[in-house]
Length: 327
Image (cartoon, rainbow, N blue to C red; front, side, top):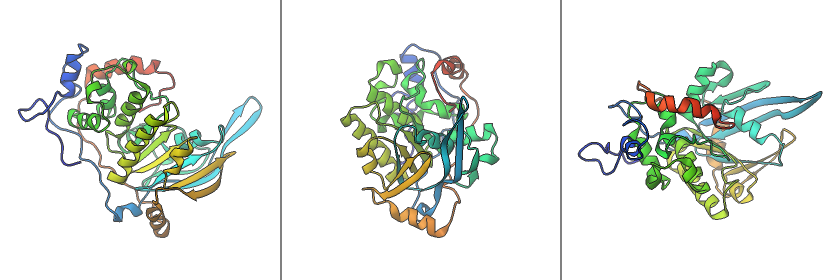
């Protein structure tokens, strides 16, 4: 990112800020968070940093019980994703792909094994610490978007920053909306968007805190082929620009083909690995040779003062959003 855009409320601003988005739509108070501090700068990893392992799963197992039947979702899975690598995980329904993704992001916990995001072992973190890590260092993109229906697009995108008590959310939110082509939709509610626009809003929310790790569960599953290609372009461009690690779960063979590496999962086990078209194997091999699991550290976002009006509006609708995970 070539520097932070000016706050639109200043004399040099070039457009309306999130404050004005909210006021123009006639919903709620004037701003999302107290000024004047903004979110931290974008993390861009250089070539040396791309030897770092952003995500590591070591002998991870997970079982569920269905009545008297034990279902093995994951069976001693080992997996590593290097900074700057795009890894696709494929396999039939019920093979454990989504379970692996949720465990990788700290939304669920394994029965056995270790999960490291950078150099943080998730088993050593409290629930509050895991939530903070997700907000600051992990970006989730879900198949069903999980946008809060009573918040505008701009407010949905700002939500991770608002919950993380970032003082000025306008610059990063405006920048991300511009990047995904949704500036003109900033004041709209999710129900007023097309499927592709909702997914782009979800991606903007996932990327607004500049995570070092992006986890995407069937990001093209509900989209037509052209829109799906555009969504993949957004994600892969982000990986190439910033050196973030990207792990996608997909049934889409076209999406998998764009990855640097493709893993197949069946009955909770990794059954095969092959190179994709992305040619991102060099960073992975460097990481394997170095043995470093030292973390693709994303800058911590500082600040104080959650915007109370948005927080209040989030609390009740968030509980109604079916299946909405903790952000």
